[in-house]
Figure: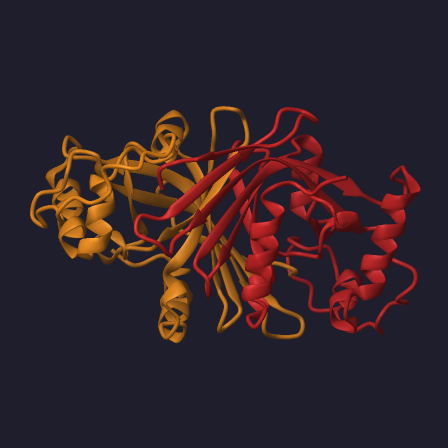
Length: 192
Length: 192
C-alpha cells in the first residue's frame, strides 16, 4: 500500500535531524479525566510495519493509558529544531498488550521490548509511576529481554489529520493533510 | 507575593539551557471543537509581572484562540533537551486583547508587541492563518512597533498543577505540585 503523502517530508525531517537524539522525542496530547488536555514527551519507536502509524511504548500503570482507554483521541506535536519543521499528527490511539489481537500487534510489542536498552527495560520493574515516591524497589536486575512484563505496552497512532509547517521560508510553508475513514489523503496548502 | 515552588527549578532549567534557542519553545495542548486535543509549538514570552503565569502571544485569527475561548483548559509540555528536564504546566488560559480589563494586561500586551522582532510582527500582516493558501499579501512593510493590530493577543496560563521530571538520575526525580484555588501550592514526590 502506498504511504501517506506526509510520510516523505516526515522521513526527510527525521533523516536531516538525525544528529540530534531529541529529534525522536515528540509531545503527545490526550484528554484526562478532569477535562484537561494532558501533554508529555514520548519517544518515537518507528512506524508500525513501515507504514503510516507511529509507534510509542508505555507502561499500562501510567496515567496516559487510562486516559487513552477512556478516550483514544490524541494529537502529537513533533518539532524538529535543526530544520525548523513541525508535524502535528492527530488521530486515534490503540494500546497493545499481551492480549491484543491480531498476533502481528503482539509480535511487534515483543520486538520493541527486545530492542529497548537495559536501562529502559529496567524502568518497567520500578514501582507504579505517578504514585507517592517509594525509596525501595528501584534496584532490581534488568529484566529478560525476550519476555515483556504484562504492563509493557505498545501504543499505535492512526492519524487522520497532519499539519505540516516549515518555519524556514518567507512566508513559511504549511500544508494540512486530511483523510475521511479509509479514503485517500487530501492535501491543502494553507496560510502559515 | 512568594513565587510558586516550581518556579525555582523552572528558572534554573531556563538558565542552564539558555545556549539553545529552542529551550524557549514549548508545546501547548488545548481542546478542539471536534473533541480532539490540539497540540502545537509556541514561544515562551516570560512570566507576567515576573510571577507564576507564563506568557505566549498569538493571532486571534488562529484556531487556538477559538479553542481557548470555547474551553480554557490547557497543558503545556516544556522539555529541556540539554539538562533532560520536563515541566508540564496544566491550568486555564486567558486571552488578552485591546479590550481586556484590567489595564495592566493591555499594557503588557503592548509591551510584548513592541519587544517582537520586525519579522515576528510582520506575520500579523499576513492573510488569515490556516485558510487556503493565498499567494498575495505576504510582502507588506513591517507594522508600527508601538501599535499592535487588533488581532495580536497575549495568552496567559494560570497553572494549577505542575509535573516536574528530571530524567538524569537513577531512578529519576519527579515532583507533582498542585494547588486548589488560591490555596498554597502542595508538592509531592512521586515515582517516575
